[in-house]
Length: 457
Image 1 (cartoon, rainbow, N blue to C red):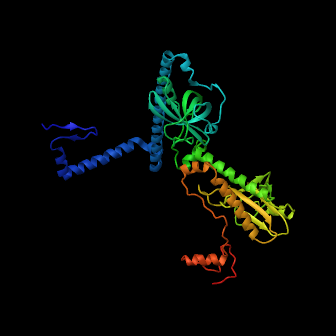
Image 2: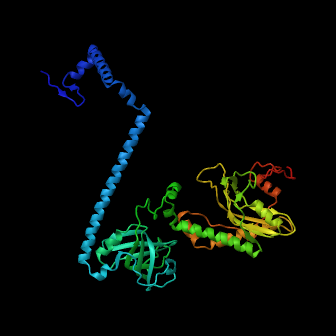
Image 3: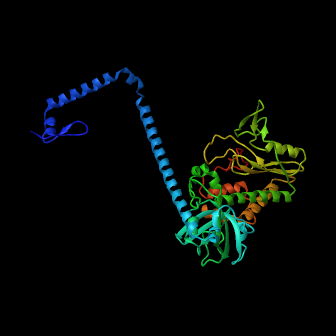
């Protein structure tokens, strides 16, 4: 007899079985007919109910794929919870062992809850202190460098200020407890300032470090989506955890720079006699052409969010307000400067403006902050040029002098901003000729503003 073995699918394999089937056409046809008959018998035995219950092929595959993803996601979540429970159990055992082995005065140096042993200072003020001083401050743990069981380096952060902390000369239990604290947790730290061997480049306070004496957990962080010490560049990921993203020193610095720009804008204009106004943001109609508006229901009537403060500013000029300005929020990225000719008056404004432009991308905003000026010129438009130069140069100088600028450049590199003390004023025909000399094909008679020039080529 010829030996044969049965496979999981019910077919038999053995010496000669494969060759017999492949070389006998009649046998191949018999197998094919048998397969078709079995398939028909299976379909008829199921009846019409199976056909009704069966989903379309596309929907069936999609549902199956979705179920598999949910199952995989649930399995991952279950594994994470299991690992977390095991980790917490291990930590509890370590804490119990530490409580038995350490003296009480050591255990008081680290625990959960604030201690208030002395005056709490802001981390920014530490930079002006001297080595040897004892300080107490609250800050977030930005990152740790776990060197060994007896040595740990921490980077503490409060807004834009960071300082390195060194944890040593203590028990291994205390070092291990601190190393287990998650990043972004708020801690209260007591220590002594000391001079590091080399300047600390990773901290904003380079010339000092803190020898940590005690550290208490004030508020622990949980389930962070990403590490703020190495944040993602993706804007989508950043906006999904916007609170965490805003904690980064670069974003803190950007907001400070923005505030300085607005404050400088106000200071320069107020020194020139301008008055700040705030115009209405609900309008009965569009205030200017060329920009889409947001429609809102105003107690049963249709109203629009203001896309520009232009008309209210001009009303103030006609009402003899003089010089006015407003810091406005709109969807374009350049200051709106409106000018009216009259015998007297200057005006400016700071307030929100909205535009419903059909550019729904992450690079377009329906709302932004702009700087609006409305002024009457006793002479000619050169007065406006000089005013704008004065305002812009004052803003440039204020921003360049800020230490926050370097914090932003550490994350988003940029070149130094340079400007001339005397801004060159180039006539339009000379500017066109400069473009032509540079090889550009520019027609002299065409303005970008849609008007025609008196100068023809």
